[in-house]
Image 1: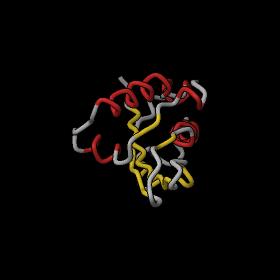
Image 2: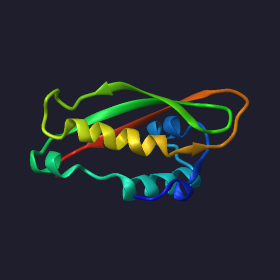
Image 3: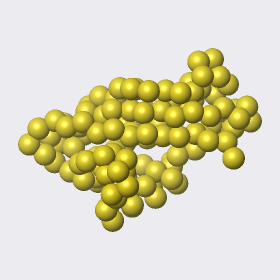
Image 4: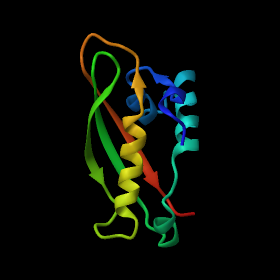
Length: 116
């Protein structure tokens, strides 16, 4: 796992741009970082546990993630590896650093675990 110093700084609004398919070059670098850092927990992979986790992040004016709220989780309750899948996305989101802004803003990210 990369350390926090290697995490690219993000422009605010990335979640919305990703959702709308309007990513800019900086977003693509973030997406590449996340793809390399995002791991399917082995027990969930063996059990073929799938689902989507949607998170809302509150980002303070200095760019730090100050809170994370799960707004949707389609991984079945009690599924093998579910807890580790959730912990993985929370861990990755806590490492993010955004550009400074005048106020606290919200960002939304969707993570999909798909067995293939």
